[in-house]
Amino acid sequence: MKKYFVLLLLCVNVAIGQTTINQYKYVIVPAQFNFLKEKDQYRLNTLTKLLLEKYGFTSFFDTEELPAGIINSNCDKLYADVISTGNFTRTKLQVILKDCRKNMVYESIIGASKEKEYKVAYTQALRAAFQSFDTLQYHYSPEPNNGQIQKKEESTNNTVIRTETFDEKVEVLYAQPIANGFQLVDSIPKVVMKIFKTSNPNTFSAVKGNSQGVLLLKDDQWFFEYYEEEKLISEKINVKF
Image (cartoon, rainbow, N blue to C red):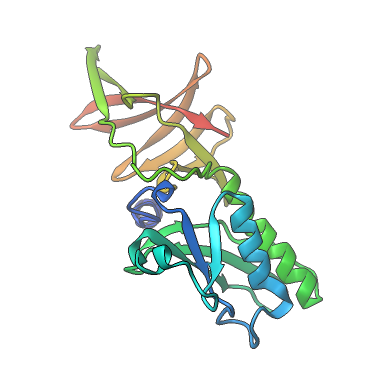
């Protein structure tokens, strides 16, 4: 059981992005992906560019002549890539966005297809990977929200109730399906916690950072409960499934 939770903690602590993706307006798409033999093979690069534009980004191929303002602002744009993790029975693709220092800013879910024809399989898998952009809720905002998180604590019967809110609104975590549960991501998006199904649909085993506990539904509100220094902590979590 301890080994199981150690593995979960390692997964949770892998940062998907350190800065808000809304700071970036432009995305550079390679004319050829490493796992393919030709430029824009199966028109996969073109589809990547079009899907990025669908979700609000301004995208360019790395072979295009870029406007002077974009060329001179190297670290104000992201660099897209698509990686293949499939095998001969299933095509699997994942979309990666990195900054100019090659830091991971966004990592999509893995899209999969069982189709045997390459063009159909790659297209289906890429579109499936881009489905996670639906929860990204990207909108270009050059000035990131620097709102401070305020924490209020009340001691009641040795239970500390923490309510975390932003200056403007409560942070929403979006549930993305994983094996046996969900990963909850913020708007960056960064994985904040992982929850796993139990026999009760209103209760999940949960891991957040170094804390292990349960996610419970009480009066239509989710709470993450765990022990800290022998005190039971109940932290309100705003989840959108």
